[in-house]
Image (cartoon, rainbow, N blue to C red; front, side, top):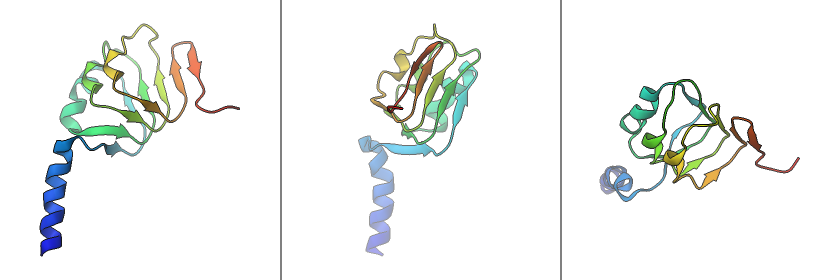
Amino acid sequence: MKALTTAITLSILLPLFGIAQNCIPGTIVFSTQEQVDSFPVKYPGCHVIDGNVGITGSVQNLDSLVQLTRIDGSLQIINANLDIVGLGNVTQIGGDFFRGDFFLRSSPC
């Protein structure tokens, strides 16, 4: 019973202390501003995306992705002129990074 109480307590308190949670195990593609804006509502406390992130289409800003701290896969942004300030808290991208014509490989060939 004590273990169950502890588990329930931790599951409630850990997100409050900003512990990084992996929330998306695969690829996620944002193709509309509405998808970006609804991210913190659909994935509250999500700080780490395990897979790849694609940003295409009519996305105008990434402000609602400010809670992200790490992307374990690749990041591809089709619009080279898109302001990426909303990704300012991302400290690590595990895969390759593409932005328009810019490409950065995560590991040497």
